[in-house]
Length: 233
Image 1 (cartoon, rainbow, N blue to C red):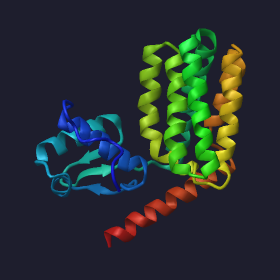
Image 2: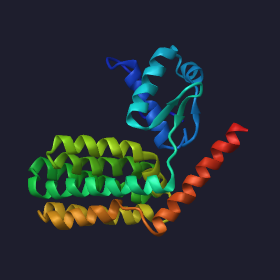
Image 3: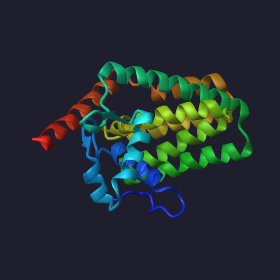
């Protein structure tokens, strides 16, 4: 699978590698539980092991992989309880972003938010959950930025990166992309109207994973783990 990132020009090689490996984790190419071998990655990317190791150390600091003695880097797995807790915190962080965005929305913020939402329509019409995944991120990032609280933006982005593989899994559940788009429309409407409490509640409900949605997520996670087990035999 080709990375959406272009080869590095001025950026540090380790940063390019970190972004590429993180993207493959998010898209399921490197699923939870998979061992990332430094030598194999160095051969694949045609680089030395040093920038690969630097990239993996960065991902370890973000909680995306775990560096284990004598085993190298393992794509992080989380228990259902832990996953539920992480989504609870994500929902509250994003709700806070929405509340502040409704109060502090500038003309530039409004344009970025509405444009991000409308850009998703093509993915809906094309029935492409993978394309929608990236547009969905753009929409949520527009809300983060509109909060104009840099510390909150940093915290939301950090947890969002940690949850990327699981948020993507959700979009492959039947009719979830269409429902997500409709929820985005309601969130956008509340933020543009300046209704902070309504915006926060709608975004909280959008991100919270419970009931059938959580069951669907666990089924998807089980399928990925089964794929890792078969690959390791």
